Image 1 (tube, rainbow, N blue to C red):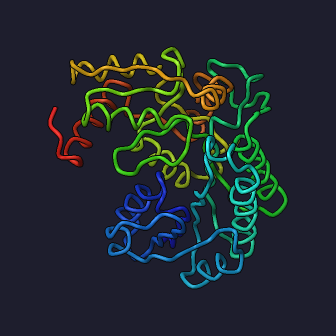
Image 2 (cartoon, rainbow, N blue to C red):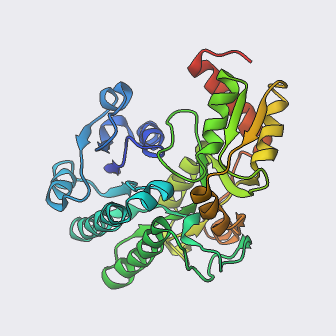
Length: 319
């Protein structure tokens, strides 16, 4: 039976990954490690919870030792827009925290999942169907930390045999936890505003095409990759995965099919627009499909329908 620790367990991905893992492996076998965000009562009451500052290597290792952890999901990160405000703090959390995690995985012989991001690519990368292996020269600190993280995971595998695996996530959309300072946050905010106010002002141009994924598929990818027979994996780490690519205008049009009176306007934020323009429009996920059977369930229409249904219940808002 796996003994799992999820650090960043109260964040956008972690707060949904922890319950999903507990459903599969048993609540007592999945430790939620949180730090900055206060955990929901569900996360604390449903299974073990520990405060874990991943920059504190000693405290991090103590939790792994205490619960006899054999599988780690290392999720903490300062995201793209926030990282541009405080690049040195982003490096500390995203890289120093990751090195601590990889060292602990080496010492305690743990498998480890480390998410990368579409931000690991830059303006010199092919924009459409970006290949698994191609030029990566990002111009954001978040992107720089993600490329560094990919290389560190490879290094720990080849040097020490650490079973480090990961995916490059596109923008993630979820109704449960608000995002925390990313460039694709508009694709979550727009649903809240559509339900509450029937209008939304978007900080990106209407024609900004971006790669996106609904959270259930993001969770499935992480769990499925970690369950895959390692002999099947050629890349192991930093797999491109994708589900859909759309513009703010296309997302608004899809929402209007359910809320006809919804209106979108635009007030472009140059910082986030520049970040978005430097990223690919859509990744080529053929390696993930071939090596471990990746296959997303949600496209744009099914995501919008489910998102509105779930979020309207959460907010108590009819449409």
